[in-house]
Image (cartoon, rainbow, N blue to C red; front, side):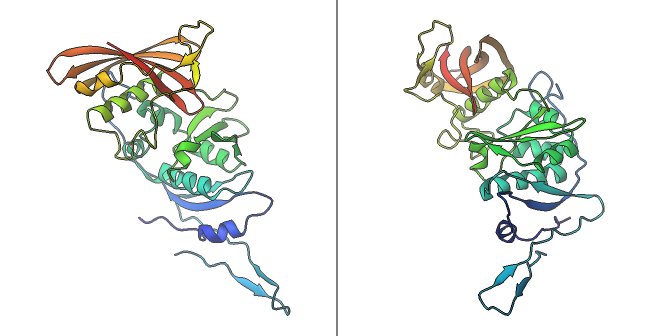
Length: 297
């Protein structure tokens, strides 16, 4: 079944008033399910044209505010609001919100590969609360846009700028009042993605270091996993040694919080010589998620 289409985004953007970005789209509900792999993070742990009115003065031409199509039975209307006009953000969140309603959990998980599968399963359960939050003006702090829901069962929706820039943003969802933060599940998924790249099987062809950096930026003196009080640039040691890895055991990924923003993740890998070894990754959490700063054998 095709998605009913709203007035064109160009028309909607032309109708923005008071810095509020509004995008609406009719949505269809999905019904499939995902079978997890125990022991890993994959467990369940006809466009409308805006009319114009011309007055007796030729120069005075006004576009009528476009009206979104009426949802069909079983469909929902989605509104993505922003405190200031941002067509890229509105489009990226609208595309995802449409999929949230129409795709099966397995297909949505595949599209939201930047998130840990476990988070896709747990964060996207209350679709009504998510859509309600998106209808409230989202606030941009430069690194992410945050939508705060209100009322009983409200949620907070956070979309990273790096995801918005790709044209499709899978946001993170938290219980209203909770402080948005990254956790060990995110750290393990960062290592999973990096190892998948190393063995030549990225979770998605678009998952590249140039557009989705997973290594900590070199040069910035902000690396201090031992709490010495004297931060240095992330050493990025051990990354070259990963080049001889042929495969890794996803079920072996385990994590430990070191201190504050630092997490250690261990993974069992197999080298090109067929030798099974353990690699330990040290990661740091920042505004965009976890980055890998060092790897040891």
